[in-house]
Length: 106
Image 1: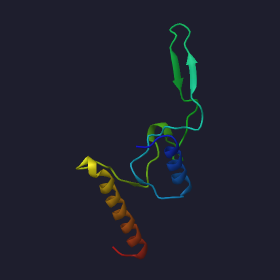
Image 2: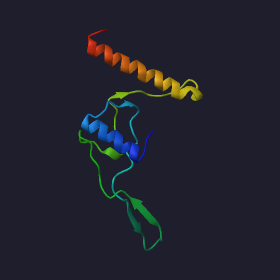
Image 3: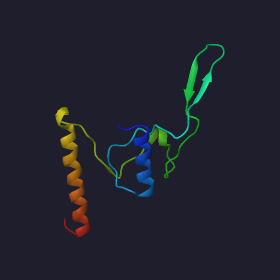
């Protein structure tokens, strides 16, 4: 899961084609603008909400869908202590597969 600057960078990579995104979708938070803050006079509550609606290139709401990676890998580790190594191995398999496709190897 990512947030803030990492979300923005993943969105940039996806929209510009700068990099192939591999992993799980982002959370869709971390907009570039300050949230709106209101003080409700009767209750005294302070309410915070997003001041704008970001839209993905496909027309979906960025806040609802986040950034969907080019290659989605769901990580449900067998052993939580080995999650990083398991993820590295899955990514290496994807990279090798992509390299083989470019070379015409099945």
